[in-house]
Image (cartoon, helix red, strand yellow):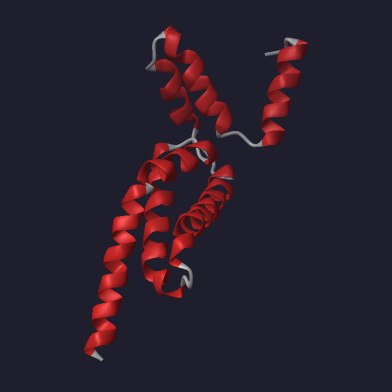
Length: 133
């Protein structure tokens, strides 16, 4: 029994050592999938926790990198779809616009646009083309 516990502790330590090697890679992958820094950090954190708890199930430890990346991509996809339908209050969008200088306006508008649903983006484009708004 004690031998099994020692082996489990050894595996957990091995996981921690290995996962630290992929820290930057995980961040870059999450950054390509998610725009929000909080979502990126949450995806990485949940990936590490999930990997830590399920490391025993990984039969071929040499495939840790691809396994952990797959977990991360699934976490990113979940967070992306979850945040895709998030409603952003007008005050928050207005705060982005009013508190920034003109050279930061483009970045703020991009953030605001990223919070819109596809249907709302298309309405904005039509209104701009018609110069109604």
